[in-house]
Length: 388
Image (cartoon, rainbow, N blue to C red):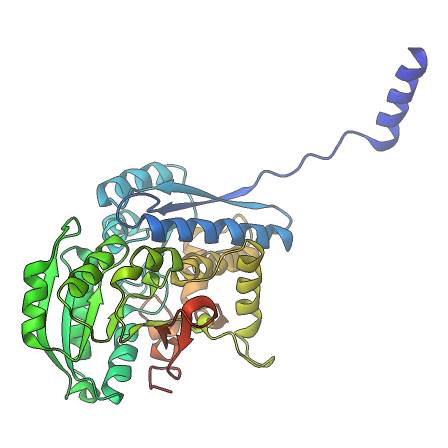
């Protein structure tokens, strides 16, 4: 007993007490893990968890590990506001989210004077110089790439159907803007339709679309409502090329709707990371390879939703690594607003363009859903949307 006590004392004298691990630096996120956007929110949450591992494996935040604390807004704007209010009481430097435009826009007024709110959707248009930033290229650039793709293929008579929520209203504004450009002067929207998020049938809207005889259809809805569009068109025997939101190119989601997918063509315009075939001199190669390697290790395939949280988290962490863990929201906002040529997985960011997204049409490529190729996705355009 005396010998054991002596050994224990000598061990403590020689080696001292175990060094305590620093507490993680917590970054809050509000995502839609349930509700209409559950599939998208789940992917965004998984992306944050994977990026957390990458950061902590590469030194963390100046030696301090980070942790993303995720709250579920249930795809509901009022719930998002409640969660944001509670988080703001802790005086964070930034909050990531939400998955949908509605909750993001509902939270935005709470962040007027900071901290940074980095929404994980391209479907918002923050005021220049504000504390609000949006993931991905602003929706108009996706639409411009899609219209260029259709137009140069000779498909100029289009039908448009979207939801009546904030996201759908944004889609409507975007296509109206795109049609004002000279390059799209020969493009015509032959029919416009809307439907509610909870609608189970869109038979009346589809009948109008069929009567208009479009050459292609823009079906802008995400998650379950997109399945409503596919089912309605399929039931009516409409089989023309369909363009949709990039987040819908989710293998799990599309597998649910495989009986309703068009035989002609289902396309999206998406971010740069979908083209991994890049030279060693391409500045995007390193970030994109890191992204794929992290997802490959977890056995998942990348989609737009993963990038919508990956790049915002990467930009925030890069700012904290430069500014330090005691940086202020004002300093982080200034850091993001002055980034030029920041290599992300969605493209090279340049926030000097002033739209709080930092990406343009040149970051977009068009993909076709093709189950015959690995990943079921085939690149069918050049950067910017021109068909290959």
